[in-house]
Amino acid sequence: MKTLPIRYYLLILLFAHSWVSYAQPAREFLFSDDRPVSISGFGGVLLELSSLEGELVPSGGFSLAALFDQTFFAGFYGMGTFKRLDKSFPELQQVDMAFGHGGLWLGYLNQSHRLIHPSVSLKVGGGGVYLAERERNEFIFEEENRIDEDALFVLTPQAEVELNVAPWMKIKAGVGYRFVSDVDTPYLNQRDFTSMVGNLSLYFGWFNSGYSYQ
Image 1 (cartoon, one colour):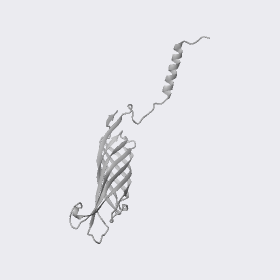
Image 2: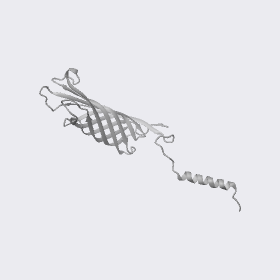
Image 3: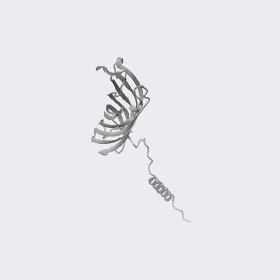
Image 4: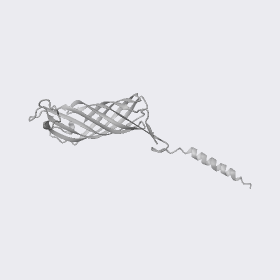
């Protein structure tokens, strides 16, 4: 029986190896040398409308975040508002309230390259509420006018829609729900702060590209 030269066996083995390598898809990783991660950043101003003590009240704030692959972001935020309480207290004159909170801000952008695209975010923070009696025009944070204060925990998940105005500017509108806990004051409770929220935001940053880390 005639045997094939060894070079034919080598060619067959080489062809089989090439076919198996072609048929098997390349394994993908979130972080690898072949997939650089684009890092940029942005910041902006926030305008929020929510219920405080059963009344719609505007709040203002800011945010600052790092943006990864134009898809995920992580940063910080701060929000605050003032309000004159509607409740009457027999032993007090007019009572003003200051409510503020800030902390960690996380989010995900879906297909951020599109002109209009959805996103979701989560704010996890702490803050405080301050109550002061105002007989004339004293500033609410003056120690002699303060009648109560309390620290609280705030959690706000949101669904949003973004508009790409320019490579360096975005407008975002969203709705969410603000959960507030740990309110311990004889004048207010957490139901006065827990509320649906609607907001409008304006952001400036690097939304077209970023530093590629490999």
